[in-house]
Length: 490
Image 1 (cartoon, one colour):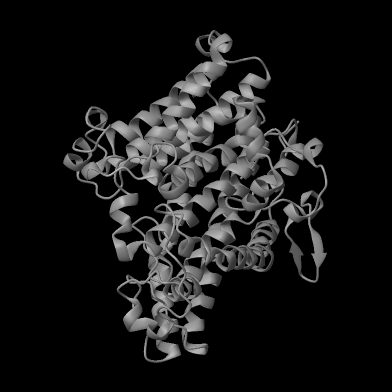
Image 2 (cartoon, rainbow, N blue to C red; image 1 turned 60 degrees about the vertical axis):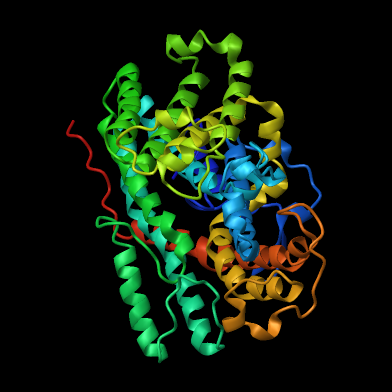
């Protein structure tokens, strides 16, 4: 994937700054880290002003990192509160069944159950980042460079997305047999009798999961990775669109991008493809805005940009909190504050939740760069650090939750049904008080003094030892025996 620089060299430089979840992470010279052997201390621990070195789209890296933290928050909230029906509280609307929890209040609920919205945001960012360089090249009519860029990007994309999944699920599966670790994930299959049987099962599971052209891909060893095949599908969509629209004039290209969004959302059930196309459209508009070439209808809105962006921001906060407990449309119509909105669902969309998340993610990514304080938040060193390790964070937070997290929750008194069969000796081992509002109880927060640093450290290790090497391997593999472009006859 690539960012949007002023020329090919700058484009490649900005690309390296933004690619942790979607493409190559920032190069070491841009990471404010302190070396310690193979790994680094987190960049946010180094007090140094790096604002001057931020790229125009650095906020996207921070947004991706914060979105990964929302996924972490959702999974831990639901898991730790399952013993008291937490999912039915967190995933229902504010006021459902005449209950008014602070964590369910519109906007606030994003911090506690916004992990679903985070996935939609991932897809918009992907569409933006993957197409920024191709769009700059096609706007400059650099057809040969565009073909080279798309060739390289498409070749490297599968390797970049799936090698980290291969490595982490293999290590996770191996730990079951090597250390006797028991996973508390209720939907995970039990371990096989022998390690060789497990390896064969893991191989069969992965080869089916990674083939994206049949059905819904599902990884039995880490179900949180369900979105990775969709990442690859969406990547193919925007790469193809970039090539297909490369000869069009600006107005026709923008019209085709909007047309594809309409097609994927109102004609067929392709919500994730629509999210990728929104990212492509936003990248195209940003590049045109740099050259003061926005379509006239958008240029006329410039005097109202800030109030419109705030309107988009608050709409995104509300729509992103769509009740997610079920995909039954009648349940949505009975939910306070959602009755009339429920009639907006297109016939083509099977799961209404992704329709509303589509709008929330699209509006959110579109408005952030135009709201100064919001953009500045996502440009902080901590958010950008989370962005750099976000793929590793996404891959390891589940196994940490299913092992260390589950045991710590049992120990502090957050007991769930599965604890009796998996970790009976940990139940109420050192109980803490459950004082505090729902979602912020003392015996929920205390385990995160261990869980969050542990997950961050493992994510850092995965980034350095697996994620970054996989990117380098993909680049090396593409560079082997690549034919030079044929020169035109004089």
